[in-house]
Length: 95
Length: 492
Picture (cartoon, rainbow over the protein chains, first blue to last red):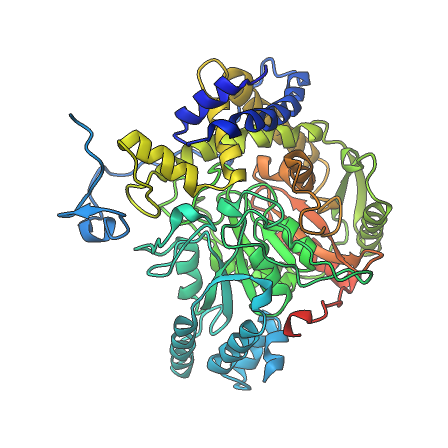
């Protein structure tokens, strides 16, 4: 599997990371080197192996569905680059 | 009073108890030392006022007989832990000006035990790196230098600021985080002890997330005993972290009995890499000899999937990172770069806010999780991870701990491994497998290279058996008699 410049542009768009046109080609080379090296994983027989999804042998805990905390509107928006009336402000989304 | 900075945590604890000095004096000595060590760039933020206030309050508590496990001990905090009202950067431009409104559980636990914060220490950006060369706040310099030249060396990473600060006596101990070796590798490079506990021991709540199934906090100190003391204060069940394990915290210090007679120590043949330096393999042989002399039984074991740990890690960690780091979008905190519309703002903010290594990993992770490639990369890596974890499970049927080198080499110079990401990734070859399996591990300084740099040995244990790991590490430490310290060039 090999990544070309267009795929890198597509992935960068999915990740919402602006990559300059001139950087796409070198980035493709770097990513291909890494992915090429990762290819060796195909040597491992993983038929009948379940993917590891939890590290510690444990059951997820249950808890009551109740409000135990909150009421921090001003703290929540305290670090916002742009804030209005206790809300996060973003560029206009709906035309 | 400058000698106070040379004390280990256990020694300072005794001195404070016996009234030989106060926490204020101890902290003042550290602040002076920090002042003369700025050239190392270990701290991103020094919290002078907080340190002095914390020490004063600690002395007051002590006067009232209220003494925590780390009462009055000055510590450095990796700048990946959220600290209330104190700039928290993850060494990234994208968190510009971020002052958390809450305190991480691990640091809360430390303050509850009386510890005092000196400041926030440097790291690789978002903990992604093995040399501390990816920090937006500049490189951290290793206090150690080769005897053969004056070239500045990397402190390892990602907890490079923690390692340098502890090794140069500008913190008595520091918190680190380990995702693939980020505590153990810099500890080895800086000649100190670094311990990653079992996944689930320390709460991840309030720690800036890199790869959530791997991230684990731990102590970095100048002795095994200090690590035991600090770890005990750091860990404990936290309902705010869904993977925190509800288990009693043992008295880790009490585990350091010095008695390992009959302990079965595994030596994995797959860690004998082709082309590994004679220095590293000789040190490993010495370690085997030391443990054998202390009455341990050495057992040859096999961890057949070792060579696949790094490639699996470099799919899993970036995949998790690509999801975790989606939150940096210029809306809720940190940097915002305006764009023509919302999407453009996201892309510009992230394009400008993330450094090269972070972007590289986010793109790899996004690709590995994208439609059509998920099975081939992410799912495959998670299956290989299961096989690596099984290797360890099998091995622990016949051994109690595993002994390996911590790193394939001593600290290197800046730029020496910068050009090829893959070469840099190989630094973590001995630490990543245990990270994938979630196992506890410790690096103990065990000797010097021919050109005078520290080298570490690693002990890995069974899940939640930190006590045996610490006990074996204590014996290793005693046998190694590592007393070398770096020359204080930074005071120059």
